[in-house]
Image (tube, rainbow, N blue to C red):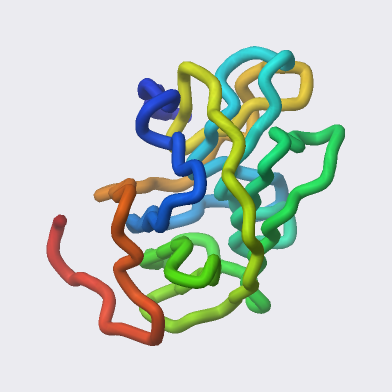
Length: 171
């Protein structure tokens, strides 16, 4: 149940820029939504504009919106892996937006989802989270039951546009 809070207002303020979010995750139990990177903060008044999670069915998901969609609106970007992650298995994940507004999701260096959507990502809350998420009521929940390490958020760089060999050592 450990998680990290950070000042999301500057770190997750992607706007219309290219970016990459990547790291390693080893999910524990699968069966409920588990937040990996969350930009909502701890208030229901600020809906999410960017969110990476493991869905209840074990699939990796990344969501983004220009209008701070959260649970009451519509997500402009939805990336979802076709296969579920397996409990106890370590994975490298990467979510990016590159030139031409191409959004990509990679698991272990293999592109598993892509879409092209031209949006300016809505502004995040003042506080963001790693390894947990915030409910639509503004309450921390969706906590990762596994482990994360070496999470890297890079604005201004789209690290990969095709399949790659994921890192094997810490960033």
